Amino acid sequence: MKLVLLILGLLIASTSAQIRTKGGTLIAKEGESLTLRCEVEDPSVAIIWRKNTEVVAVDDEILDTYGGYEISMEGSTSVLTIKRVEPINSANYSCALAEPEVSVTFVIKVQVKPLVVISPDTGVYHARVGEKNLVITCHVKEGNPKPGVVWTKQAAKLPEDIKREHGGARIVITEVKKHHAGKYNCLAENIAGSDRATIDIHVAEKPWVKNEDTFIPVRKNQNASFWCTYDGTPVPQVEWLFNGYKINFNDEKFKKTSETAQRLNGYSKSTLTVGDISEEAFGDYACRISNKLGSVTAVVHVSGRPGPPQLSFDESELTWTVRAFDKILEYQLCHRLENADHFLPEDCNSVRVKKSDNNGDDKWTHTIDLSTFLEHGNKYHVQLKARNALGWGSMAKDALHVELQRIEKEEAKGASIISIISSILVTLVTMYLLF
Image 1: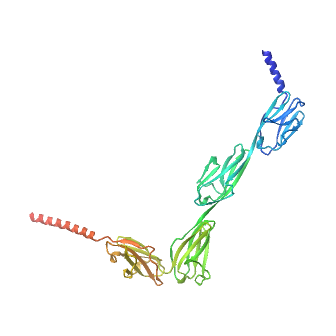
Image 2 (image 1 turned 120 degrees about the vertical axis):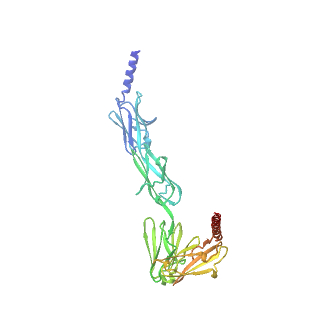
């Protein structure tokens, strides 16, 4: 039995020795050429090359003419060349002899450079501030080994409020904000190379505008400046209006008027300066900001006459502040019952100005006791305006609701205290007489 096994072993060894080359695993990069060499002891025996189970060449003849192969003999070595390695070449290639049937196998692993595309595939994505759940995905179409994917933002750090999903291949902006605007790169990388794609996110923002005051006091025949701050995307246009109409800089009252603009940190500022402002130029100035997403306006009233008072009420005291550069000459206090429709002339009283009302600036502050003018226990609406040499100013923006508490309660409380004191005195006198 041992003799039979020994003979079989020698036969197997003699047959396998017909191919001197050993197989193995070869790593190739896409786009490169790859050469497989198969050295045999007897070159007269037919040599067959297979890709998996498909025959691609026999001896010096290529059967798969679409595979990009070349075949040649170098002495006793058959040389199969893949002229340009493609991902499809990842397979088992075998070199076999017709007689005896022996073969060696080469395992080809093709390293494929990544290929990525981004969706949406518009190149530029137009978003709006407030847009919800914006999803941008980096699709890896090719790549072996499996590439890693990284999102970055050009010229800035990836915003922290952006979520990453699907192994980092997808980014989600829960709510679009202005700082999300910019170019985003998707980078896929493996040992074979890298690929990147870029999407440019444009963030449109409805214009906004604001000013610091709704009233600005000025001096007649002096320069008056006022401004508004604003922003928006696309960059909005700025227009100044006077009493509802676009300012005509050729108008006599605006011939010395100029407009300037400056870009600050995250917003813009437009300043309008009216030179030697006249009474004809007192009125409402509107800063109108517009882009394709809409239009907004901020209005400021500019005048040399007193501005609308700011009213406050505490118990029975009414306090107000009026802004004006020229001296306030008089206040007018008006009141009406809560259910009345109008302020009647007979319900308006003149209030004298005190020297202490002003400290040299443009603010005039005065306090009075309303019990002088109103009855306790009733509910009133109170209004006020002021006058200087240029005339009466406007009333407060809103009438003030006031009510003076009934004094009967205070009188009753006082009477109760007197009654208690009287009782104590009577008791003391009685005790004195008894003793």
